[in-house]
Amino acid sequence: MAAPPRVAVVGAGAAGLATLKALADAGVPAVAFETAGTLGGLWVYGSPGSPAYRTLHLNTSKGRTEFADHPMPADWPDYPDHTRVAGYLAAYADRFALREAVRLRHTVDRVARAGDRWRVHATGPDGPVQVDVEAVVVANGHNRVPNRPEPYPGECAAAQMHSHDYRGPEQLAGRRVLVVGGGNSAMDIAVDASHAADRTLLSLRRGVWVVPKYLLGRPSDTLNGALARRLPWRLRQRISQRMLTATVGPPTRYGLPAPAHGFLQDHPTLSDALLSRLTHGDIQPRPGITRLDGHRVEFTNGHADEVDLVIWCTGYRVRVPFLDPGLLGDGADRLPLYRHVFHLDAPGLAFVGLMQSTGAAFPLLEAQARLVAARLAGDWAPPEPARQAAACAAELRAATARWGHRRPHMRVDFDAYLAELHRELAAGRRRAGATR
Ligand SMILES: Cc1cc2nc3c(=O)[nH]c(=O)nc-3n(C[C@H](O)[C@H](O)[C@H](O)COP(=O)(O)OP(=O)(O)OC[C@H]3O[C@@H](n4cnc5c(N)ncnc54)[C@H](O)[C@@H]3O)c2cc1C
Ligand SMILES: NC(=O)c1ccc[n+]([C@@H]2O[C@H](COP(=O)([O-])OP(=O)(O)OC[C@H]3O[C@@H](n4cnc5c(N)ncnc54)[C@H](OP(=O)(O)O)[C@@H]3O)[C@@H](O)[C@H]2O)c1
Image (cartoon, rainbow, N blue to C red):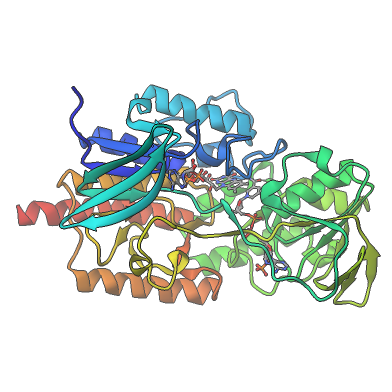
């Protein structure tokens, strides 16, 4: 008979699976609860809560995205589609025999402290279940709850939807479409619309740097990666921004607003096709919206257009609804966590995936999971509480200097953070050894 779980993991997307794998490697029995009927999280097109659309591909290259211990097949393209990524996560679960630990169709409703343990309540097809464990790992993802903007002045008569509900170009056919936002959802959906819709407008309230997926004949994130390992971000910024503008010109060249921040001070917006569709006139750029009245949209430059459908690509809210709000302080997106993983005041509560990376996610999830597993196996110890708090404060200062008030608590620089997690694993092992 399997040993009773010592740890409960909430979610079996990439983060939950990486956590189960690391815990299994460390010999720590665990159970994961997953709302959906399939594991793989948002990469499973059509799974409840997934924002995946038919045309979705990775925007981080496969070599930078794969888990260190499970490479993507060599014959795959650099930017595989969602079906391949979902299959890759399923193969990961099979290869490391993770499925047995996952209770599908079980939604965690509440996680509460029970003495020095944690009580996890979930609801499954056969009713409520409860487990008592010594630790909980929150791996519930943060791209599931749409951030719907406050209504603009006017009575909008055009149809409206959030990008979370976008499944494919057939929803756009024959319509005059306005896509709103400067993130990756907006880029992809505007490009889809430029092929399927009658007319496509793209409204950005502020400028962003749009990076092609290939630069100098290589996946663009591999160029930055090679530089990142050696140089401070300010210097990388100067080099990368110069290289980008020398290759594709500034965003204003395409009619987009000028970015207010330097390159590498924002979440990267990646698209090959957007710039091409703009230069072909198949996407028409617009600034921010001032008013939506009937089918008419007015913009900050005084221009107005008629549209049938507005797609709000306005991002997501970070929510951890099953945790006591007292544990979330000013909100899940402002929660200080030691190395973006460990709760400062609640031993036994850890987060995998509560971060916003400048690059890919999976290798970071994998490294965070190893830290969690090492701690629960007794091989890793955190520093003194005061040092943890000081480390969080220093990181927040640096992140605010770089990213301003755009989610500074959650920002991590892919290469620097990955290196830091490796150092942290070694340092915590030394601390654990010293206290034994
Ligand atoms: C459209 C889109 C494209 C992206 N493209 C890339 C990319 O190209 N490269 C990249 O590196 N990253 C990309 N990302 C980031 C993406 O978040 C990560 O790749 C990765 O999927 C994160 O995994 P996760 O497990 O943290 O979250 P998710 O994949 O969202 O998985 C979370 C899981 O938790 C489950 N869950 C949530 N709440 C509960 C609950 N209460 N009880 C039980 N189960 C629960 C959900 O059902 C889900 O299965 C993209 C994100 C989006 C939205
Ligand atoms: N693999 C892929 O190709 C792919 C595709 C889609 C998404 N993704 C990933 O999924 C995550 C979410 O991306 P996302 O594009 O959905 O969200 P996002 O990155 O958060 O971008 C949201 C955009 O909406 C704008 N916005 C927010 N509120 C607005 C408002 N009230 N009015 C006008 N504009 C508003 C934001 O502008 P401000 O910055 O000014 O707030 C921002 O430009 C990211 O990690 C992204 O990389 C990846």
